[in-house]
Length: 109
Image 1 (cartoon, helix red, strand yellow):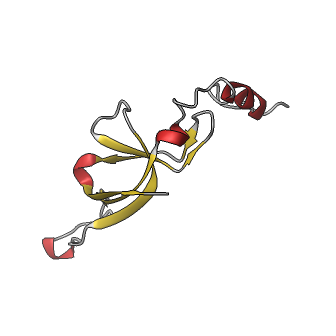
Image 2 (cartoon, one colour; image 1 turned 45 degrees about the vertical axis):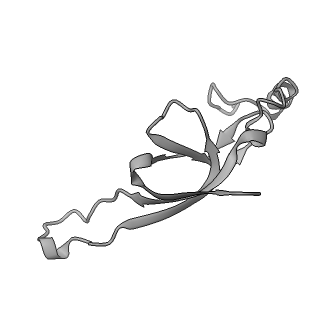
């Protein structure tokens, strides 16, 4: 039985062919900057009754490092990806609400 795959995914051969068509000026891998973002995450308490003294008083702080995808449709978020291919595909996408960011620092690589 042939394997099922996402309609938007491409085979390696299809991606290699399309990568030859990508302009070097448009390539994300050449233009995306790497950032270290420190941010407060939203989280839930356990599913039980609480009083004020039992609620966790510490913020849940996260550190994310990856490529910042500029000019995306999510203007209230920083979109960070871990991997970018030569033909502008990317994976491991996280959208961090800008209002939750504590700090953002560009990393030169």
